[in-house]
Amino acid sequence: MPEFNTGRLSAFYVPYDFDFDLSRLPRQFFGELSRVAEERQLHKRFGLRARELAERFKLSEATGLDVETLLFLMEDLVDVQILNRNHREKFVASSRRALFLPHCARAHMDAGCKAEFDAGVPTYRCAHCSGDCLVGQAATLGEERGYSVYIVPGGSCIPKIIKAGGFEGIVGVACGMELMPALKLIQKYDLPGQAVPLIKNGCANTAFNMHILESVL
Image (cartoon, rainbow, N blue to C red):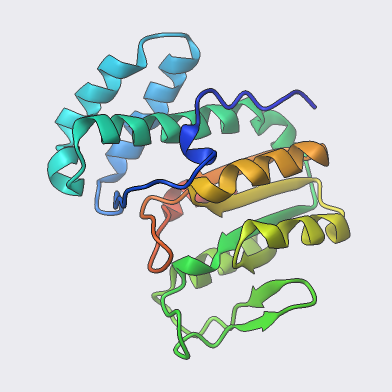
């Protein structure tokens, strides 16, 4: 399996030192990001297109972030899409797949969540207790499509699951801090992977785009 061409992906080496929330942006924004990713892969200029996108969707006003920080974030989102595209063919050809979801995107991070943690795996077992829970919805979607679903508190849980699972393909939803170690791990085991980055960061009440996850699955 070839080395992952991660480009810069600086946010994947250290956590973001700022908070962001792109969850209220229209779906059209993420479609435009995909087009920017395609252009970048053809070695066209990224900066100009990213600035145009930021101005068009008024990202500074929507997020409270300055333009340079937004460009930093958008570059990472674009690089994830490029990475996914580069490994898509082999992933589609795989059969036994696993979906890893972040526990921090649960609707409740207290007793309101009925999921039980199975330390032997390790994963949370979703009880599907809340209809508005993003993780519960994603778990249902993954299960319906034949995925083994794991809701993990961190990337350190993943090696044990992969070793025991016999998987041929992996989908991971995660923050920048967790994505790079996970990508290196699946490369080690020669597994094609697809990444879905969070669009709202933090250690609780995080969010990802369900439409993007659905298209990746």
